[in-house]
Structure formats: structure tokens, C-alpha cells
Image 1 (cartoon, helix red, strand yellow):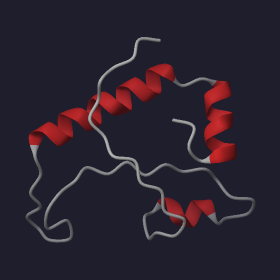
Image 2 (tube, rainbow, N blue to C red):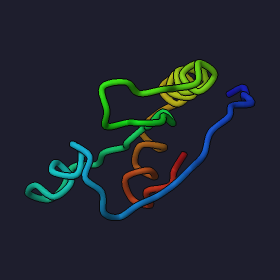
Image 3 (cartoon, rainbow, N blue to C red):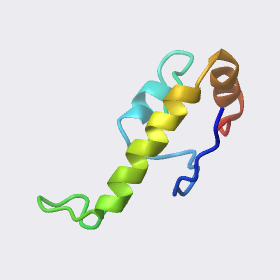
Image 4 (cartoon, rainbow, N blue to C red):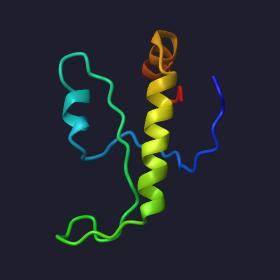
Length: 83
């Protein structure tokens, strides 16, 4: 696959309050990845984001989905850092 230069920041948390957290703790657990766009005033009615961050997030998500296969999915699930 062609390597792209994308702007991103990787952060891993073992406890958080996103919607995916409930799915992760159900039955045997369900893998979930939270992709966030940096913003100010996230919990208000007027968040502020930089268009560059939105565009880079879209590029990152498209690149990950285009490159995803069963082997990589298994690695992500087993180690949590397969990207």
C-alpha cells in the first residue's frame, strides 16, 4: 500500500466515557475505536474546529478503511495498537 503523510495524534486510554465504552464491556466485549477531531468548547452548543483537522481526519479514516484487512483487524483487536 502507498504510505500517506497524514497529520494525527495517537492516544490510548483504558477508561473513557464515549458511547463505545458500553459496548466494550458487554458480554465478552466488542472492539471499538474512538476517532476524535480536536475542538474547543466540545460540550457547548458552539464548538470550534479547525478545517484542517476535519480534512486530515477524513483522509486518515479513508486511508485506514482502504488498507484494512482481516490480518490487520485481528492485530488491532489483540493488541489495541495495530494501526
